[in-house]
Image 1 (cartoon, each protein chain N blue to C red):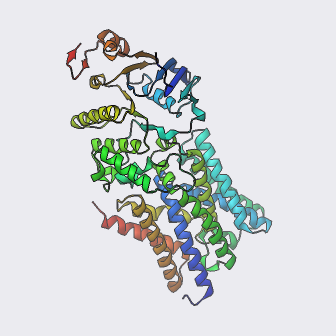
Image 2 (image 1 turned 120 degrees about the vertical axis):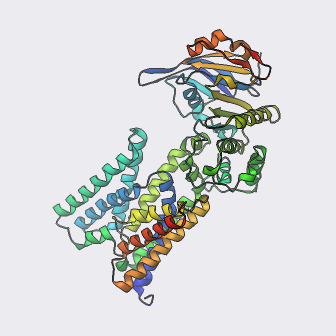
Image 3 (image 1 turned 90 degrees about the horizontal axis):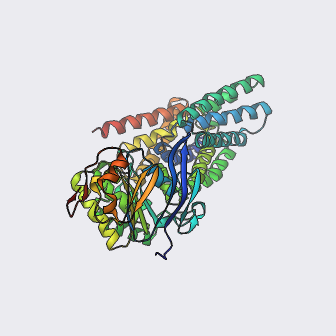
Length: 262
Length: 256
């Protein structure tokens, strides 16, 4: 299957996204912020809807909308002291509703939007791969450079603050990087499914009860393995790639639960 | 008369939350080398007071100076070690070994690329050995007992080489034997390592005779540099609003 250019691109993009999603997902899950992936994916869908109606490239407009939503979430959480899960839920349904209204009003409710909902890994272009490598690479460096501090914040935000860690700035950095990673990913995995790739490998890794580094590496391995496994199955059995990847990672999660059962 | 710069200089501090007075016009100073106990009833404002000292809570009026600087301008946070109230009641499933936790103490004032170097590793080992938890370094924090977790949290605070240690209700979830070890360790840190200690408790029965200053907080603060004098039944009765019977000096056995 790797003799085809489109499959090579699909595998490169998929593996890169698996790495980005699992590493950023580690911090998201530890902060009890799992729903943020879903919410930002739907916010970036608003950007896709605007781009489809306007006839421009959806990727950058999706990034812009996801970033705005990410900052709005931080603002509402920080200034108005609203419950995080309630804020995420409001923005999730609000974004999806707005995206549907925009494409319907603009007459663009077609298969293009459908491919952003469920992903279309087999239609990944060379430009998509280059964008994921460059932008995703920068996002990854930003997270890894601050990984220890983000881990400290996830463990105890107040003590981190008293230790002189710029908690607000790093919270802002984390949600911004997650917004960018998600916008890059919805073309490949789909806005309805990317949240799963951020949360499930980490949750599976947590079952093994290891320290920080081991948990992150395990989660990375589960994520990459799921993408490779899911895409291979999707190629040989003509299944939709995004959904197959998610089912594969859920399978790994169940196996993790069973073998670590206490 | 003291000539040294106070670590904490609290000036006319008042705090109201939702029109309710939590702290009222508190002025006091904490100097290097002191061993300070902050006592008071539950809900009296002890934890809020500590949070205000650390910049986690903004006062309604008044100010807090740390080493002579207004709290917003203070940058040397590695000098302040903080062990919060719920430190021993940690999330049991959090993926952290004791070593992961203590290493967090080395992150103060690290730049954008925050990685650990050899000096960090040495300081972490030193702090863990001092707290007798080096042998537990590979164990998950959720698997440790309350007393062991407490010592890991103090090791984390010590890893940054602080000159002052603030402990809020440090014995929550800790058994009696571990509490005894804890007080011996605090005494050692104060006497041998010259670390200023400030600890908050609602349990007046555990106050050691090591303390050099006692602050009682129940909205307002009363400072006593002679702790024994402050531990009179009359004062305690006023503070707690009940008839108090306490062990004023648990080593010497003076019972009030």
